[in-house]
Image (tube, rainbow, N blue to C red; front, side, top):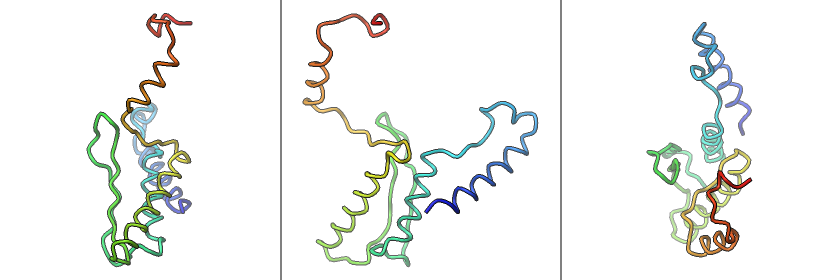
Length: 136
């Protein structure tokens, strides 16, 4: 689902970077293909091909404002079926797939640690109270 996107995006980036001339020797000045942008393109293509997504209505995949927890990704589309139970199943199937494919893009979901997470972490820390930089 990404071959056309990757070829087109790489050509766009190569053209952009060539125009930088001398400034392009500094890596911070160049554009690159990113895992997040590629994932966003994947989601757009996935929705365009999904049989339960209404292809005649608006579809948007976009970044929201960054937060301390990460960079939210909004997925906006309409299902072909508006009955409540099937609709919820379509939504769940889409997000099950998107969550399961995240590691293929080097991405992961952020979730606030719970009390259980903190208990597990503290049990593994042990009694060594030295700052991490002092532990070798």
